[in-house]
Image (spheres, rainbow, N blue to C red):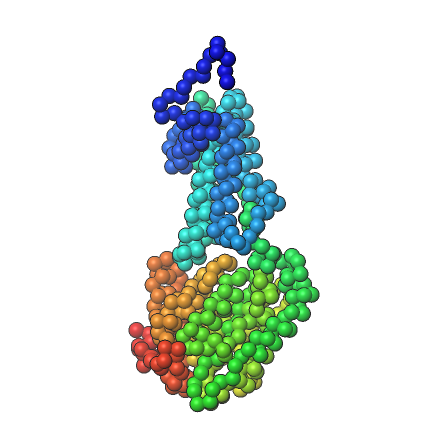
Amino acid sequence: MNPPDAPQAPAPAAGEPRGRGAAALRDLGVNLRAALALAALRARAPQSLRATTAQLVLLFLLNLLLGVAYDLYSVGWQAGHFDALALPAVSFWALPVLLSAGLVAAICADAALATALATAGFALACWESIAASALAIAADLSPTMDRAYASLSWIPLIWMALAFGLAAARFAAGSVRRRRLGILVLATLLVIAPQWAVDPTARLWSPEPGNEREEGAGPESPQSEQTLYSQLDLLEDALDAIAPGQAGVTELFTISFGGDGAQDVFLREAVGADSVMADVFDSGAHSIVLANSQAHPQERPFATVSALQRALATVADRMNGDEDVLALFLTSHGTADHHLAVSLPPYEFEDLTAERVRELLDDAGIRYRVIIVSACYSGGFIAALAGPDTMVITASGADRTSFGCRDGAQWTDFGRAFFGEALAQAASFEGAFRIASRRIAEREAQEQLTPSLPQISVGAGIRDRLLRLETRRGGRILFAMQSRNDLFP
C-alpha cells in the first residue's frame, strides 16, 4: 500500500489495456499488422513499429510456437516429443536478420534503425512460418501442389526476404537512391543465402523413435544387424499368412512390390494398392507386400528379386492355377532403358526388368496374370510381358515419364488415379484403367505437363478369366468396354 502522501499512479485511459502483459500483446499485434503490410510490399515508416528488445523476444518465441504447431499437425501429439537439439536449426533465421539489420544501421549511421528493422524482420518471419505451413498443408491435400511442392516451398522465404529488403531500403529514406538499392539487395541476400545451409528436416516436435528413422540411426536402421536378421522372419511370416485358394471359385492373389527405399511414397503406394485390391476383390487373405524403406525398414519384407521369387513360388503353390488370377503391382522409379529401381542403401539389389519379371512368372508357373507397373517409362514393359493370359497396365508410355514421386506422399499420380479413385468405382482392372487414364490426361493438360500416356494390353484369356472373378460386393466384374475403340475413345 502506498503511503498517504505518495503520488498515485494515473488510472489507465478508457479502453487502454491494463498491465505490461496486455501492453506487450498490443504492441505485438501492432508489429504483426505492420509486417503484414510490409509483406504486401506497402511502405511503412520505422515509427509504425513497436521496436523493443521485449518485442524481439516475443516475436522470436511466437515463431517457434508456430513451428511447433505445424510439427504437431505433421507428427501428432501422441507420436512425438520435444527435441531441443533442433533449436539451432529452426531458429537460425534470426541471426541473418539481426546481422542484416545491424549492417543497414551502420551504413545509415542510425543506431535506432537496427532495432526497428530487426523487429520488422522477426515479425515477417512469423508470417513466413504461417505461409510455409499453409503451403505444406495444401500440398498434403492437393496432388497438383504436391507435385510442385519442392519448388513452391521456397516462395514464402524468398517473398519475405524481398519484403524485408524493401523495408530496409525504405527505412533508409535519407540515403541516396543508389545506396538504397544496395541496401535492398544486401538485406535480401543476407536473409536468403544462409538458409541453404540449414537442415530443412529439423523440427522441434520430432517423431518418437520407431515412427521415423534416419539412415544409420539405431538398431532399426536398414543396415543394422537386427534389421537384417529380422527380415528372414518378416518374409517367412508374410508368406505363411497367404491362404490357399478355394477350389471351384476364381480368386485374386496379389503381390505389391515397392522398389525404391529412398522415398516412402513407394512403400505407401504398395500398401495402399494392397488395401484397395483387398477391399474390391476380397484378396486380403491372399496377399503380400514387399517394400524397401529407409524410414521403416522393419515394417515389411524387403522388396528384392529373391523375395519376389519366393513370393511368386508360394502364391503359385497356394492358388488354383487353372482358376485363380495373380495381380502383381510394381511401383518404383523407372529408367529410360526400362529398368525398375530396386534400392535400399547400403545394400546393392538387382533391378527389375520386364524380361526378369517374365522369367520369374514363367518359372513359378502362374498362368493368369495382371501386371501393373507404376514408374516412368513403364510402357517399355509391355512387349516382354504381354500374352493371351496376361493383362499389363503401365503408368506411362515407353518414352514418357509419370509424375508424383514426392517423398511423404501417399500415392504417385497414377497410383492415386488408378487405385485411390478408379478401382473401387469400376470394380475391374480394365474399367479402372479407362477412368484413371482419362483423369490423368485431364490433370496433365490442366497443368501443362507432357502427357504420361498410360498404356494397357489385354489378352483374350485374361479378360475371360477376370469376368469370373467375384468381388466383395457379391457380383461379378463387368467391363464397360469391349473393344479397342472403347478403350481409346
